[in-house]
Image (cartoon, rainbow, N blue to C red; front, side):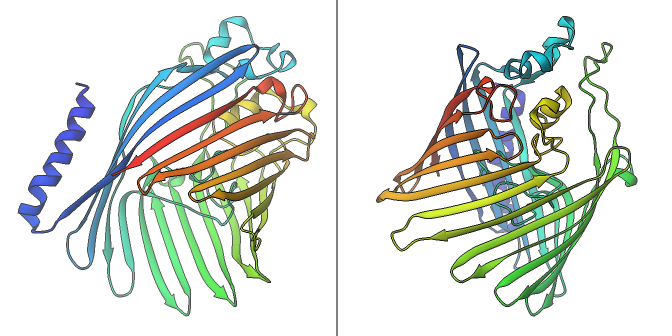
Length: 399
């Protein structure tokens, strides 16, 4: 047995049997098992990646004011576990890359066992204190979050759970719907450690946030390969952000907006903007639209270079094209079955992806999610046919 799996099992058993004895408190254990198939057709070949994921959550109320929570993830990968990004790109983008360097443009998957979250929440009269590895979710956008410097969502699966981040967070209620949040996430140097402060208030039917943050950021240069390390050079720099977001309801419409300006220590400053809205008709059809602008993106697909593509796939930036629109239409076809259609359209280069979706609940504890992804754009565009089309099927059982 893998030593990390053994350690996780040992910790789970220890928590289950020893914690109630030592503290007199009950430890709740829950989670899910997820089996997922993903396939993609690229250059006349169809590749497959299959994953099995076990997530185990622990939670214990140590006292009336202290709660401990944690979860472990084990993910097993089968199928094509190395995906070379150059296979998705056109010849004019890859032509300048030497043949000996091409194997290094790979995203690899290997079995993982890791502690995703583990934190203590302490509730005091003037504030709450949360210490440890925890989920940090910022912003009101559904697909894109300009104010979130910790996470990048998958536009085809934006509601999938986000990873934990080690931080110390203080939440201070100020009354009348307002609050203040301060957060610190350590790195090797204070200069590059993440620091954040966010103020929340409510006016009429809208919540408002103002946020200031800074964090270490790295843009790698994927046009140069360091043969000694087998990696691409990148220098850490400080990213400073000032932003705001809002969400609420007016005339039956859900409305949200989010904006952030980023000052970069070395590279070009940039800003991001999201504006969105949703509505549910009387016949239960749900419609949502979200517009996103990122000034790091390009307005002409002829200017997309290897750095644009690689930084996008490596989550160093959220977009390749400057302007995009996300559209979701969803309708309950029958009890426990929702059918939908997603379209992501690049206003900058005129390409689009069409994504039919299905969500079905086999029972209270079993969910099925599936989609097909068809790219309709010309070669070299964000949603160009050369980037491949495919699909995903996920079955999840909760316990």
